Length: 264
Image 1 (cartoon, rainbow, N blue to C red):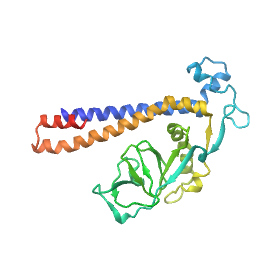
Image 2: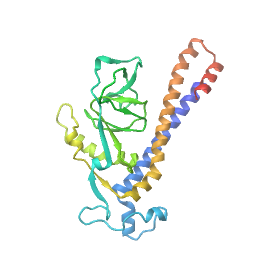
Image 3: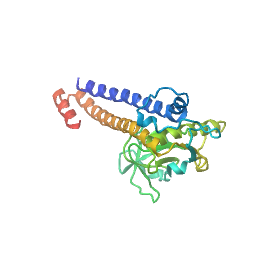
Image 4: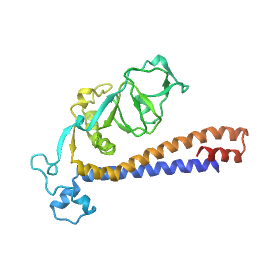
């Protein structure tokens, strides 16, 4: 059926995104956590990457840092601008899509803002699909935003990669420090992530060559996953619009098919 076709495509996109995200994590872990290429070179094993990529990796680990030779730890601020959400007035929130959607902590998991606002805040910061956002109360999970363009509310922050830093690399690098903060703050009623915590984050910089290689492989995966998610949102909206009208007899199946084709 028409609606079944929409559901099938939504499910296909979901499964594809699971695969893309797993592949991105696997590349990151091998290169930047396990140091797989460097360890393989140290042990004289056969290359498992293309020759131009293989040559980018050091063949020794630094005795002091434990990192591949030449790689360094650097401040989060060498990798990213950190932008904090603004305190929009809750009395001006509306659930009728009037104004601009607003991302609150509760909206991060669903990528669907529950409220909008007509307020313009002097510290307002707009989030685009694909941006890295993190909630700062309760849990500090990182999300690649897959919802609509929206304002960022207070207690949510945006990690905006600096020039030459791939979004995919920054996102994967931040997951462990954020998980550490979440673990270390247990015991309080509601845990809070502060600017002072974020300022202490240090990430590994492997050099521009390795970063560029990672970007060429993994950034398209991230971009495709965002595109898939946005497409699924559109398809779900079409389905939810058509279903009640089909059930009520307001439109016939052929009309629904034509509406679906127009919206696709």
